[in-house]
Image (cartoon, rainbow, N blue to C red):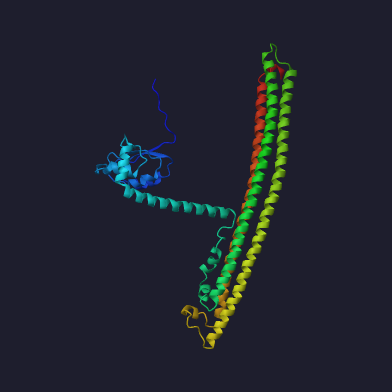
Length: 419
């Protein structure tokens, strides 16, 4: 008898016969546990890329130009230290040590670069994960000066007016207070996110416990029914005479009682879950409403700061215009700033345009936060209701299928003459 060798489901082998291997290897990085690779052909390959495959243990370079290079095996041993087989021959530990010593300088430099690249990758991943966590709390980019900076990113007039005497100090004070409020929103948002998470986790746990308890009760009733029903069916099958109407009716009554019991349990569970879902919905809506109310209050403080800054900036601008009219211009002002001081209407319009941009940015960020969390809340509650409807229908269908099976089994024992 020939034994068939079982294939390792986690093993991944690859043979690249085309010259265009660089693109192919890029996509290969997506293959989990890539272990074996054959690279024949007429084009050399940057084998250092293969270091990315931590599970690679077999490599064949037959037919590859690099195999013609002098001492290429020592190069492979040094740059792919985890390799076990090269060109279908096992690599000895002694040869690996010699190769490592020979290419130590270049491999150490390569390891250093890889370490730096890995550190950057991990930092980027951590940063993305942190941003996603902040987005889940609906306070992303509010833990720094991002919102304040965005207000001036497209504010041409505001940036010009910052050159006016005294505006620099005014901006610093404005920014410090504005960012402080943003950080308060951010920290409050994280705390409220934790409260919503606890509420959702508690709700999920209660639902699962109720369903599990109900299932255990249903299993017990089914087990009791099957024990009695199987005995009744066995007695009917073993009887020498045809089953009497009384026995059939007794079994049919047991099936009906089981159906009523299971449906009663499901109705009780559905009512219990409906009440739990309603309570959760009220709680989560209240949490979201409180969060929105407090965030809007803090955003109103940002608007108050902007209004105050606008008044001060307008006052400085008017004073600067009056000095220019009197022939006392500030020699340090850039030409594009001086161009704003043609007349009072021009400078007032410039300050007003800057103010409008800032208020719009604040309003948009508030609207975005409110829209996103309301959408999240609505989708969450809707999904919970849909899931419960699906669960209930599935359970009712299971009960009917089981009862139908028991009925058919009983009907198969009835005599055709007993209809």
